[in-house]
Structure formats: C-alpha cells, structure tokens
Length: 103
Length: 421
Image (cartoon, rainbow over all chains, first blue to last red; front, side, top):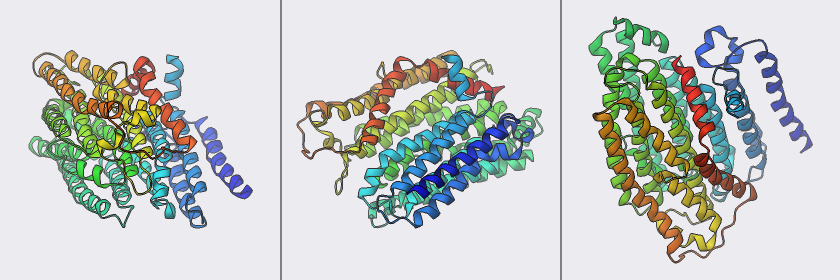
C-alpha cells in the first residue's frame, strides 16, 4: 500500500511541478492562443489525462478487490488534478482570477 | 471559456463517479475498471471538443466522447435493456456524426478551410459559395441538434435514458452537455457569426419544438428516467432560446454577450441540478431494485427528509421556482430574449414561460408523491459517507447559487467576453 501511495504521489506531483515550471514562462494555454504557446503547455491537460488513463487501466489489471478502491481514488485524484490545472490556467477568463475579482 | 468549461467538466465527472460507485459496485460494473477508464476517455473527448479550433479536431473529440458513451451504456452486457439502448444510441449517434461530418465537408468545400477563425474571416469576406455553405450549415445544425437531443432529432434520448444503467444515464445527462454547449459556441457563434440570422432561425424552430414536445411528453410519463429524458429535451429548448437571442433582428450584436453568458449559466446550472436529481435516484437504487418509477419515491420524506429535500430542490430548480438556481437560469435567458427585441423574441419568451408552467406540473408531481403519498418501499436507505456528503453539498449548491448567483454569472460573463473579443 505504501508503494502505491508513493507512486500515486509522484504521478500527481510530477505533472503539477512541470506545469508550474512551464506556465511561469509561457502564457495562456487556451485554444485561441495555441499558435503562440509552447506546444507542451497547450497539450498538457490532454497529456495528463491520456497518461493517467493508461496508468489507471494498467494498474487496475493487478487489482483483485471487486470494489476497485485504488482505481476509484486514483481516478478522483486525476480528475481533481485536471480540474485544478484547468481552473488555474493562465488565460483571460481564468476561473480562479475571476472568482477572486468578484470576491 | 474553454478552461472554465473543462474545469467544470472534470468536477462533474468527479461528483458523478462518487454517486455512481455504490450503484456500479452492486451490479458488477466496476470489474475491469472500464467505468473509470471510459469515463476518463470521455472527459478527454470533451476536452478536445471544448478546446478544438479546427472542424476535424472537434469531430475527433466528439467521436472519442461518443464511442466512450456507447461503451458505457453497454457496460452491463448481460442486461437486455442496456444492450438495446446501446445499439439504438450507437446507430442514431452514428447517423448524427454522419450529418455533422457531411456538414463540415460541405463547409470545407465552400470555404476551403477547416480552421474556425479562417472560416469566420472567409465567410465575412463573402468569398464562400453561398448555396453549398448554406447546405453545410443545415447539416451542421441537424448534427448538433441530434447530439443535443433537440426535437425533431430527439428520438434516442428517452430510450437511452431509460435503458442505460442509472449511473450511465447520469453521465449522459450531465457532463457531455457542457461539451455540446462548447461546440455550438465554436461551430456557430465563433465560426459563422455572419450567418447568425440563418442559424438562429433554425435554432428557434428547434427550441420551440423541443419546449413543446419535451414538456407535453414528460407529463404522460410514469417512469422517472423517461420523465427526466423528456425534461432534458425541454431544457435544451430553453438553452437554444438563449442562442436565438444573440443577434437581434436588426443585426445588432450588442446582446451577444448577455445571451451567450445566459446560455452558459443555464447549462452549468442544469448540469448541477441533474447531478443532484440522479444522485438521489442512484442512492435509492439497491441490488436487484432500480428506483425508476415515480411511485418508487412515494413517502420518501418519511424515510429520509434529507434526500427528499435534495430531490425536491432539484425538481423545484428544474421547474424554475425561486429562490433555486433554476429560476435564475430561466430568468437570464428570458431577459436576453427580451433584450434582443420585440416580435418573435417576445413571443418566444411568452411561449417559454407557458411551457415552463406545463413543466411545473410534472416536476411538482414528483414532490407531491414524495411528501404526501404513503411509502411503498420500507427498505432502509444506506449510502457511504462520501456520497451523502457530496449529495448534501450538491443540494445546498442549488439553493446557495440561487440566492447568490453573482459569482457564477460573473464567471460566465467573463468566459463569454474572452471568447467574443
């Protein structure tokens, strides 16, 4: 279980750290600014999801429990990460900025 | 707009999976982890649809979402009703994709480009073939109407809602609606603003028919899932009315921001409400028993006042009763319609209000059954803590966002403003 927890933490922390590093130097990963943006920043959300789908599918092969607790929580973690990253992405309509301004 | 919709789609999927887990676990749907991987693939398709700025990319996203959805509907392979629903969904979905792709190819033939921005510039410059372009637009709108489930392209909605496992019905009725809203914005508002007068007329017909057929057919339903399917058709009608209000009869574009942000607010709140309503249905279902009939909710208030309260909040919100968020959603759409001008806009608003009154009948019938009928079920309602907590917060959101809609309205307005710049 400890190994699983570590693997999950690393899987989630790596993309987040990479995202932070890249979004500091490039602007707006929104579709409308795609041609001016580093390709990786623009495709980051898609890559994250695609990688995590593969990880979850492979990881699930080794699970024996019919309730699939680990798969469930790993999926929720992926979705939370995707929601956080898209919510805090740098763009004109960044949800976190709009909410902060409204507040 | 894209980031905000993607963020909300991911949150919707999270809530959905929390609701779906006990239901899916009791029916052996978690085996193999397909529910999770297909759910994530569907979300990836939605992301591609929301972000796409090229007709083919949008189409690819749509197909990724559609194929995942077909497989999700057929997840219970031993269930005859689910496989039948999956087959119907697949055949009609393929037809809709064909319409959409044919429309896209005609538009490409008329303009010589697949890029949304270049497409808008080409049409504005008047160098596109008008007849081919118009034919392409008709196919495009038909394909979108199929995907949205608007009348007369709605025939798949009741059967798929009814036949699919309830957890998958919740999926079909929630997150993909956000992506559908995004592609309507991309393909019609962003790519063809100069043809707004033409596509608005088509959408107006679809909206009026959806409101009429959706509401009248829902009145006759005794099955809760079928009733909610027809209700979703009616709600799509309301959503389309917001798109109709974008460009005024005199060609004025002053109302675009108000109308499209009203549409976005409407779809977001609709998804939130659908999550709450289906969350209660999932919670009441147990092994060997699907809580699908309206009568299955009889006396729910005596069994659990909390779940009855959440369901009542969902029903009142769908009916547009203040102070719930559905009231604000309907109000913003009606305000946008009235701001667009007199004549057809005014009459559309009047018709929408009349149809909302019809809608109130079948929504309030569910509330009446929950609070005034004698319970027919006596089994204890048990659910994991996380499900109860998320459901309570979801129900509370319907009230809080109804009382303080400012933040969500600001978000929608900002998202649409960034798109229209």
